[in-house]
Structure formats: C-alpha cells, structure tokens
Length: 256
Image 1 (cartoon, helix red, strand yellow):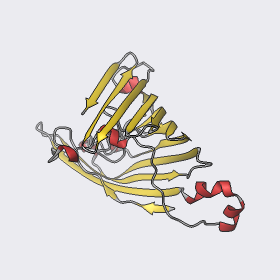
Image 2 (image 1 turned 90 degrees about the vertical axis):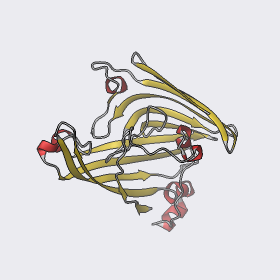
Image 3 (image 1 turned 180 degrees about the vertical axis):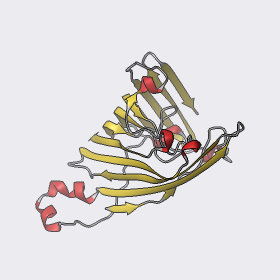
Image 4 (image 1 turned 60 degrees about the vertical axis):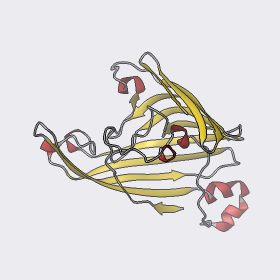
C-alpha cells in the first residue's frame, strides 16, 4: 500500500514544552513499547501469483509504502544578535513488509532534509547540516523476529524510552543501530531489553558509537538497556527503565 502523510515540523524546546492539563494527557515512556503493528487494507497487485503462493499472502497484503513529507521554517534571533534561519523540505519514505509465516518481517526508512532557503551566515537551525548543507540517510533498516507475543528487532531502528529516543523536533529523528526485544507475554506487563551500539543524530547521515555521542571521543561503546511496565488498572501503572552506557553513563528512570 502507498500512503502520504503530510507533517509540518513543530518547534519544541525542553524548556518551552507546554505542561499537560492532567497526568492522563502526559505521554508515558512505555506507551511506545509495543509489538502491535498497524495493518492496512489493500488488494493484491498480482492476485493469481499471490494465490499460488499462500505463504506470501500476509507478506504482501500487510506490507505498505508510506511517504511523510515535512516542511519546516525556522527563524531565531539570539540575545547576542546572531540570527539562525533556514527553510527545509524533506521527510521520510518507509517500507515495511507483512509477517512471513507470522515469524519474520522487514522494513526500512530513508530520511532527508533539503534546503529551500538558508543563508550561510545564518547557520544553526538544526534543520540542515553545518553550513546549511542538505542530507539524506538510511535511518532504519531492520528485521523483526516474532515468537508468540515477543518481538526482536535487529539492526537500524527507532527507540522511544527515557533519555534514548527519537527526539523528533526538527526535520528527521534520531535512530539507532542495535538489537532490542519487546514482550507482552504476560497480561498488563510490558518488557523491553536490548543493546544499542550506534546512533544517527537528527542532522547526521552517518552512525557513530553511542559513547561518542555521549561526549567520549575516541571510544567505541554501546548502551545496554532493560525495563518493565506494570498496568495495575486503567489509571494505575508503574514502570522502570535502566540504560547503562558502558564506561560513559547510567540512566535510571521510574514512573508511577
């Protein structure tokens, strides 16, 4: 299936985010930890061919190709008189297959940000690379392996947990290389575990070790993570996540 999802970049700053009106409206980290996939209704392009190979039916039927265009204009005048300004156009193109024998699926996403306007002396918007240069990157390229209600995701992927997340506040998000497992084997319990080796920052077209991204140049270390969330009732839940950056940092997060 082919779809187009327009989106304009929304300006966020950690110190400028509006507070939610209630706790129920606040997004919780484990809301993103799920193995449920969105299924698109569609007909086969070659029905006779697909009908001849039943194992291919869900792979083709539930696959999709999406385009998410994004345009973002940024202008800011700093207290020292410096101005950052640019207008970029880009977004993401994604493909994901359906499940093969309810065990395997694969997908990939290409991100891009192209300059429509950007004076070289007004660099620093976070929409483009240094010197207002455009970029394109293969941000996701993954294989998913499912066993019952648990899914392992291998290689380039998106992660959304506290401190390690997409941080999608400009043209393209952060993505990560590594291996993660999410599980919903037990009722009202979500589990996540994994090891991440590298990260592509928002305006980068390459991946670098997470220890380098954390401020340790010349190193080559990753992050091991694990977490669990319990939903006791609709309005009562708790969870913990720990992300251990080898020889660099340790982040522990809990919520209730």
